[in-house]
Length: 385
Image 1 (tube, helix red, strand yellow):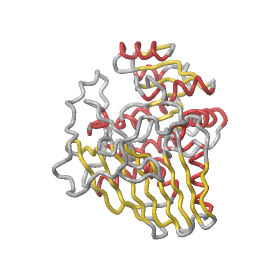
Image 2 (cartoon, helix red, strand yellow):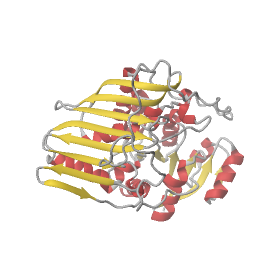
Image 3 (cartoon, one colour):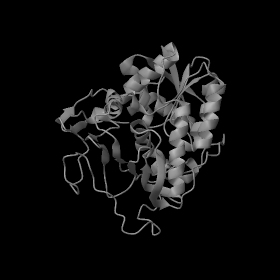
Image 4 (cartoon, one colour):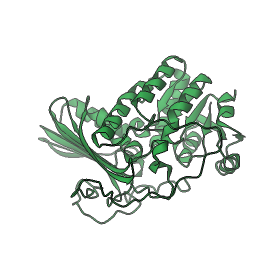
């Protein structure tokens, strides 16, 4: 069985790795390291992880481990992925893969220098059967020539001092939320190019919301919207309009909590349903298969370069700085800065309200804020993650 260590006592790890490992039986999380050893011990006790290492370096050097999971802040992903490869470990790295495209290329070069090791970007939704089916529908030609694509992902992340609002840790809405729509756009339409973008800021240089426009090779257009703090409490949808039909998806990124897929064309309207099994379970099985059997997988280091190129181009189009790798300091991290001002940025474009919530493609705009449960038939999200 694959033995995995976790770099950092991250809140995402139980949902993304620890519980999937127990459910699937394909891996065992056996160690954790954090910059605060006491926090790591408490985390290990809570999540039933057998061992605590006193540093990231010690975890990478541990001969018992086959692989490491990296859920650290965005600006640290590249450094520790390269360090893990140098230590002979397979890597499952959280998205976004790196701080920018240049760093993604450096990681891809390091991965190429270690051909026996797997480096997977953790775009878990790509491993769900629904995502494969969406790509199949678009590529089948039943929608005709793609004219428009609209993808949005908004969720409230307004915690005081949240690392996702820190520029020095490569934070921002486009990095943490927008990377999902960008990756899905790339799956549905090859070769999108950024034509414009507008951001709303939480602090200088840090976007709390982004609205980006793209051109498509066959003459179509695309729009990607994301937000960590806006009037749109929750927005999870994708729509593809072609010359012969349309595809509308509610909740493309976490279908296990409820989803809806509708296809309309000359033959009529149909709906398709998919497994409620967790996207993270599928991802872990794919990671284990890649490590143990050499099975191919889509979210490679090379693939991540193009995603980061589009994220970089979006920031440039919005007049914001491309994110940079964080400084790696072996000393304990300093306290997070004060809570960012989450009010509308005075310098943001005028008359640009946040889009209405779109939870159901059949629902009108400006509907009331949704409840936590996206679908009345869906299981509640895991507690304590």
